[in-house]
Length: 186
Image (cartoon, rainbow, N blue to C red; front, side):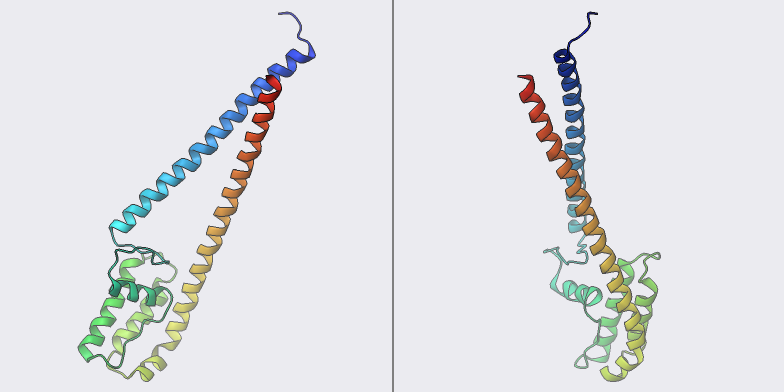
């Protein structure tokens, strides 16, 4: 093989670099596409089964469940004094069932939440002020746990967006480098 000049070596190097860049861009594209399809499939499955998530983004969930879910996630599950004793007991049971169905045994808020729900269920006959006095310590623990989980999820979302932004910026730089190399070859 005859020795190559500087121009021949540069063209060979440029061709290999373009191939490398194209492989990296394909990987980036496939990763983004796979993540999008996975997330859309998860959302569809969750929507079909009436899962709302912390943001309550499922428009097909019944309004009563949305209100109760909002109380569990953001507000304070409480029993109105205007309800009858049977209605209070039923509402406390609904809160408890919804909470237990939405958390597994490893969930960090399972124990404090179940403690508060048990307090509501055991004291449903009491007046609101008496019940609040009895249940406030367990609610404060549950509320602190909920806020911690929400903060962890917000931080995880922010970190994921940062990683995605870094990957997107790298892909943009690779695409620009590829364009420059293709221009020098022509």
